[in-house]
Length: 401
Image (cartoon, rainbow, N blue to C red; front, side, top):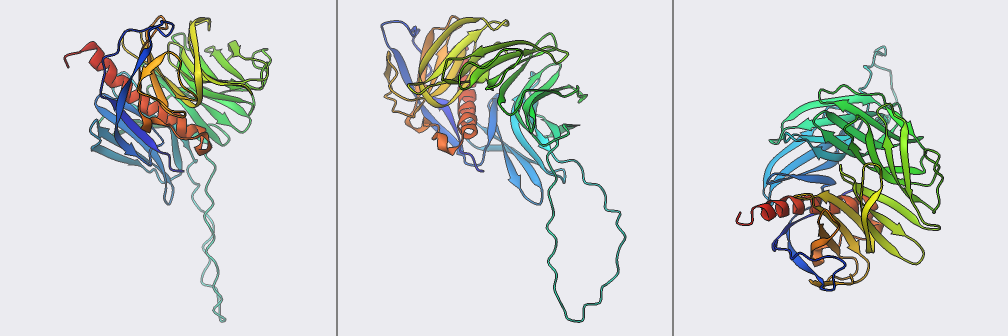
């Protein structure tokens, strides 16, 4: 399915220092449309490049990666085609500028060793249909490492054993970790920087979803998502609870924290490496975005809620700041400036203490309706926001730049 990906860049980058709780309104500044890519399914900003990927259906399923500069012009393109089906669904970058794609692929085909049969007599000239090629299940986890110039540096693969889908990837100097879903639950697996994979860790059922993964310094992982089942001895309270999970290096669920309310549906859709988290809070009476900074023990240091529906995303800004993107469901009380309508995207700049220091929006940032697909909305929001953060942070620390 083609997914609309819209990239924005900030025109006005001088935000007044305003607290969300202050009587004086937070001024919403305007951003402008930079470029669009109707095929992109995910992406990130790397320096002055925006790198996006899309999956293609040819003789096999292939991956197309494109890099554009901040004016929207193509810098390079790359197609990954190993001769077997492969699908990318998550992207990240490491501290050295390399780009990592994560996804699933089909196992290599076994050579045909059947006996060759000679021509068959067919006096009536009966034609036979050519048998359709059956595509193999995507039962392997694959990582593709590319240079900033688009060169495919490495491909690493490990067996999952069943069909799966990667939902998140995290990269550090020591390696790469991915999280995803499979038929009988969710999984995480790690690989060293040279492609040596750990054992696949599985838990839960289809009632649990992992949306974000971060590598911990002790070899474990922080996970964020949602669940409607008991995990780590913690039973669900709402229709669906948001969950924050610490998985130890050995694969045990050492900590499970549920964000819940009776009858409500909650989900943590994005969480950064330092546990700044953004997610949904939905009930029969309201729909909100929850924006919370957690400690490594999952204790909230500050939190806020705003009327929202649809997508949301998060990112780390400069000097300990954060950014949250969401789709507003009604007018935001205490905000002035750009008049945002229902269903329009808004991006907040928030300092380390939870004070909103600025906001941006544009009528074109209506991230699309939920009927178009949640992943589409979320990926769009993530890329828009990532590009914004890179340029905002640079201008903030270098105001004369």
